Image (tube, rainbow, N blue to C red; front, side, top):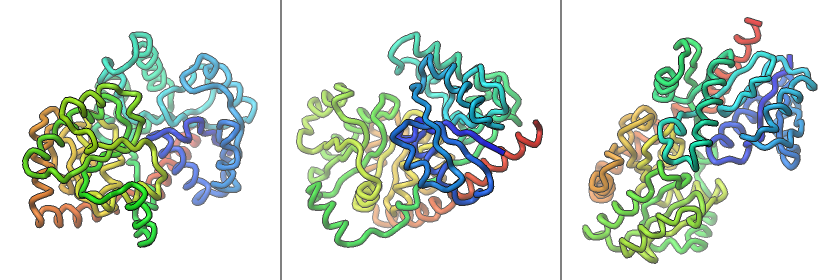
Length: 371
């Protein structure tokens, strides 16, 4: 049995986490199956490191390109794949074998105003529709995402299977004291700080977070800093303007992408983690913060209440004052902070990549049995 997995987005922020953990767990729990990872040329060694049963095959076509519509099916034919797993929403229509697609969310259709143009919207709509019709199973990462898929596409409920994401095990480990000291010194963390982790696309709502942070500082927390970890600020001039309007120069820092080991320490040192996203298929960063023992403030919409449960303060992400009040509650209420810390640690333990990938492996077997 040979199963092919599209691993070209191995280093992406969200989907990359999914692909890396999928491959790593399959390499560990299913050594008897032949897995082929379609990947970029410079990822071959990383693919091999996941397990002896994982074989890299270079696929040079770029994701979301015209070339992949022809090259990926040809690659699948050449390697003799019995099943193909597309871990994002593009499943080339010329694929002539059993297939599974993971649709993490429907952000492009829910918020088309954030796409660069109408052509991008048309592309997303067409390929999401095609994937939902063509795939033997659709995997998604929350009940909220499943509801969106069923509402937007004409597919039977039983075809859509919810399998939750999980966190990297490195967020569960207690870092060495010398590593903590090094990170404190490297990033000059002398004051308490609010932390945000994730990309800074408009639906992530970072601009409202900046305004909420300004309210919190004016309410007596003028020592507080805001750290934003994710995309480079140069990509979104609106955030720079928000910092300027709120007169927060020197109080808001954009650090870009950081190694997981550094990120794990920054989670642990934060006074509060805030994630006011307008839409998430799953939302890993709140769980990463919980696993680190950091109190979480997050949105009361989309999948976030489902994932966070009662282990976070939920706020209205469209209301700057609601976000600010959530942050202030955590900063001023010692009992609440401790309750969130304990609940968060317990909540994070419920999510396991091994458990999730075993469920994915069961779906592989189910689809192959129906061939």
